Length: 211
Image 1 (cartoon, helix red, strand yellow):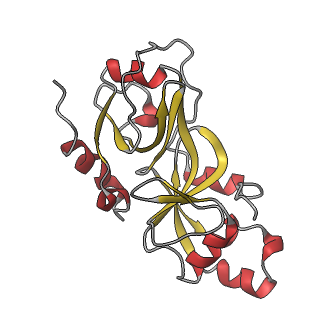
Image 2: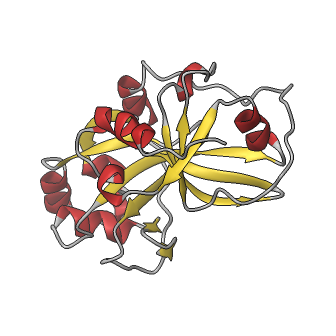
Image 3: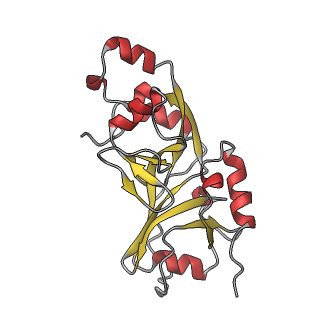
């Protein structure tokens, strides 16, 4: 099993990402107190968010504990690219590769951390050697799922995502105390909505009322 890593086509990806700023997390952040996990929720940027790259962002939170948190942005589509550019050329024949170049797939920015790493977020109707279940959906990170998507034998719903969003201990909590983020229940229809521009509005309307 080979894990999918962006290599030879990193320049291609940059052609799609000129509107998204990549930067490190702020060094001086308010460290908040850990109360409870935000895992298995949407993390939604509010109008008070000052970090431009997270403007109107919706994140599926996969892990959250006292040591930190991480998740995947689901509404920042970079564009479309041939699925062949996501697959190690040594794993396919020239004939198969030619066919894969004819299949374009949407690709998404998942966050500013490890942007060469690919995550396929997908419905639970599919499983491969690398698949990890996160409740309502799963993540796979091997080439088999890309071949299956190309053959239309993959999951019914999926997002191909570059990189992830991560926070150190207390960092996300501090940002939430500043009202930069709010939460809502995860909605699979929103997660896999083909119209990415609608996801933030829909998720925001479903957000929890702060009391």
